[in-house]
Length: 81
Figure 1 (tube, rainbow, N blue to C red):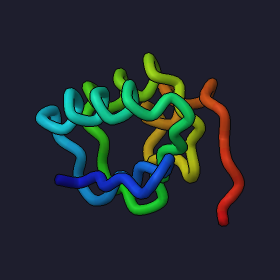
Figure 2: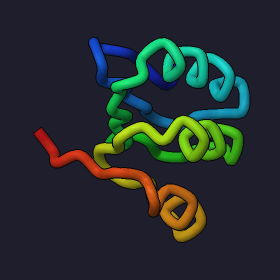
Figure 3: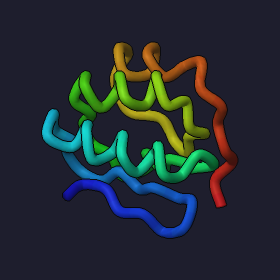
Figure 4: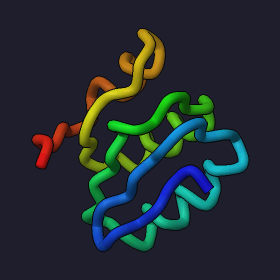
């Protein structure tokens, strides 16, 4: 699975496919104060982007590409650390 949870931090790594969207949504629902770390995410399926846009977690890092960046532009950003 290309994401792991450590307390309130959820790290997305590598390629996040459509199959990852529903488990990610479940984790975000269970962790309302989550920060999603995208620093090691190489690619996000649009379903994963939609989950992030609906759940509105704070983000660390931004995905590459104009479309993913535009989709997530309105979400809060956490400083690296």
